[in-house]
Structures are given as structure tokens and as C-alpha cells.
Length: 495
Image (cartoon, rainbow, N blue to C red; front, side, top):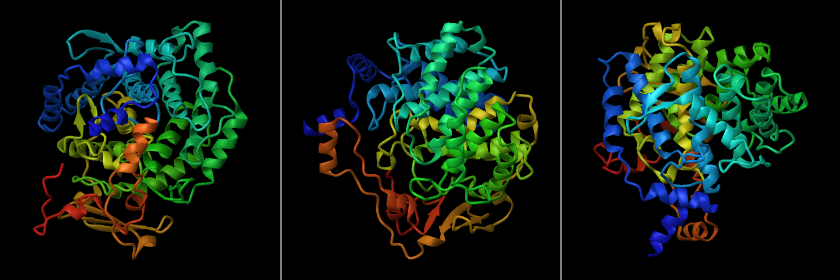
């Protein structure tokens, strides 16, 4: 009985009545995903099929899940899974907003915008985006996302909304009434003057204001200058930024910072172009060695974003940077998505809350059912380019590890990247962590479970030591399974 109460509380959070009813609706509904999960896996891993067909199926898989879990208010998506420390409405807002840029990029590229949902009914994705944005930003609507406050998740998702509006300006924005445009802009402008976490979050007000300026709406240049200057203070040379809060280095460089810098340059090519181009070129020079055909050496927080790892290679190829070609970037994209799809990282119409399959031990407390969709940040710029663009038309090239073994030092951050061509293993050696003892992942204690029940918020162990402080991180043996390897060198059947 107690166990069931704990599980229920973990998935609820602080829930307004309408959101509680929505959760019940989906949790008691039979989910018809078994065949769709198998279909996307079969098609995407079939190298004999045309590449565009494989990626179209991947796009449709995510869209079908999005439409299936979408609420009647059209601005929330209630994916199944363990909730975050936020309330259910925020988790569901995240579910909508993190899918929106991929839909917008797909439409912007000229690909079809009318698709079939899981029931075979036609759906116009332009209307889906338009209706959701209008509902979410209207205080009188049942779908209203709420007002943006200090240090709040709405800031993160507001950036996805702003980017999507810019991508869909010819399809949605210019067709809106003056009142509708003002209502959306007023909601986005709420981010100005608010406190943000002292890390990649500084890019959120920058992105929003740059988008509003591009659409000839009021914006706050002082906010842009303040936050952008602070973000640049984290720069450590050769393309790498430290995490402002922890001082650590992780994949937020790829899926957070350089991803945002790419879009800033696309939206306003005059926005600090020399720094953006030089830092991204320098970053790619070493970063491309982290990807193999057999996974990545994962380290740091937000592990559930793992499929976004090739994002800066994709954006670098689109920008024509010297250190990356379209064929190499697309090979990296394909290897990452093929690896994780082969490990069943897609389930029930979305990405799992783990590394391979579900693994709540790896999930941060700020992550909920829709958080894993940050993984789409490698697909979004890829779908932003038309099917006949150089990015998609160039012949595939081998990854560095498919060509030779290597040892690549990154002294600016204290890393050495080692790659073994024979085994396809990539290892990150963190020189500053030499001598640190291995520790196991900490499971959720009874005290944390009790706290979770009382407060109705996620209270998982952060496991910061094993995510950041080990001496080595391997692509073949992720840190949480190293202790579970048999003497024979085979993984136990634990996932």
C-alpha cells in the first residue's frame, strides 16, 4: 500500500484540478505504442531504406506521440513517466514546448505539414502550432502557461516558443491579429528583469529579445547585453564554456550553449558573428572525437538529453565551418540516433527517462516526462535544412574513430579524449579527478521517498559525484553499469 502511494505521489506534483483530471485520463488509457515502437526501430535501423524515409519516420513517431498525449487545451502534453520537482502543468507545458521547435523547423524547410496521427486522421501541424501558442500565452485560456517568475522552468520553455515563432513567422506569425501578436510578445517579455540560474540560462532572455527584435516588437537591449556578457564570462577558450553554477564541463556546451549561439546567428547574423563562428569552429575541433558508433562517454547532468549530443556538429556543417563537413556531421547524427534507438531509448511515443531504457536513478529532479525531448535538439537544425540541401545531399563520411585510434588532449578543461578504432570505445579522462575513488549510484532512500510523498515533488538523489567526479568515463561501460559487469566482461541483464 505504502509503495503504491509513493509511486502515485511521485507522478503527481502540485496539480490544479484540471491537470489532475488530465493525468488520470492518460494513465488509465490503454497506450497502443508497442507496434509503433517496433516500427520506428525497424525502419530507422534499416540502412537499405532511403535516408529521408528513415528520418521522416522518426519525425512522425515523435509527432504521433505528441498528438496522442496532447490535452484538449492544446497547449499541454501529458507524457507518461516520472514527474519533476515542478507541478504537473509545468511538466505538461514542457511536453508541448520541447516538441514545438522540431515541428516548426520541419514546416519551415518546406516538408509536408499535414500528417496522419496514430488513429489515421489528418492533422495540420501549422494549426497545431498556432493553436497551442495562442492558448498557452492567453491568460483567459484554460491552456494558459502562467506568468514567468524568477528561476522558473517557464523561462526555458519560453525560448522554445520564441524560436518556433521565428521559424514559423511566414506560416503563423504574420497571419495573427495585432492583439494576438501583442499578447504573445507581452508573455515572452516577462522574462526581462527576472533572476536566472547563473549558467546557460543567461542565454534565455538573450534569445527571446533577439527574436522579438527580429519581428519588429519591443525588446530589452540592456537585458541582452547583461546576460550575454555574463554567459561569455564562462568561456575558457577553444570553444568550451564552464557551467557557471558548478564550474564543471559537460555536454551543455553542445546542446545548450552552442545550439543557442547557432540560432542567435541565424536570427540576427550581426549578433557577435566573429565570436560565435570562431568559438564553434574551435569547439568542433575536439568535440567530434567524442562520438563513436557504439555510444558516447556520457558525463554530467541531464543525461536524458543524450541524443542531442551531435547538435553542434549539425549546426557547424550547416554554417560551413572548416572543422566539420556535412557528410561527417550527418554520420555523427545517424550513429547517435541509431545507437540509442537500437538500445530501445524510444518508448510510448517519446524518448525514455534514462540513457538506454527507463532509469530513474539517472534522472535529475528538474526533469519530468517531457524533459527528454531536449534530445530533439540534434534533429531540429537537421530538419531546418531542406531535403535537397548540402547537409542531406553530401555523401556520408567516416567518424574519426572509424578511421583511426587517437588521443586528443583538451588542456583548457582538463580532459583527454581517447578513442580505440578496434573496439569503438571512446573514453574521457578527467585529469583533475585522478585518484578519485569509484562510487555507486545512490538509490532513493526511504527519507527521500517520504519527502516526495509529503511535498508531492520529485526528490531523487542527485548523484553529482558519479556524474562529474570520476577519473574516466567510457562509451562502452557507462559509469552506472561499470560495477555490474561480470568477470567475463559481459553486462548483466539489468536493463
